[in-house]
Picture 1 (cartoon, helix red, strand yellow):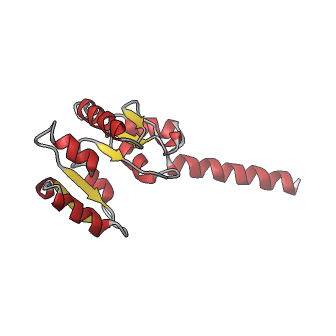
Picture 2: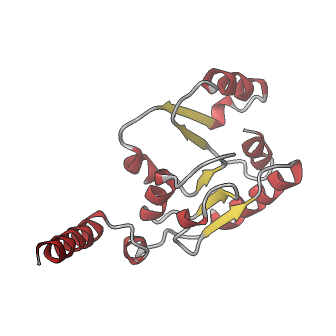
Length: 160
């Protein structure tokens, strides 16, 4: 929220679309009201059509303090979106060239997020993002086939 508030000082037309919920949701809503940016922040809550909503945005940001392999970051890249991801997130989540990892621990870091947002929001969507994801092993059909072949080869070795 602090990052977005700072971004609003540089981009008048900025909007923040927040997807998901959790124990801090009400606190976040109150903080957004306190900062007087309620007209720029949309809280969608938990939804089932995340890929559809990704089509409505220009840039995906994931400012997580701790995260394993975030599927939502892969979904965003599959949509061709430039991404800014917290440096605390595993590097395997970054597939597209327009994915940037940034620290998120200090006020100076927020300025880096704002600068990167301004830069990356001007980059058009990656048109062959699905191919790039497939090349990195993020294609369920291809990976299921590989797994099937592996199991069959292991069974053959065991039978012989």
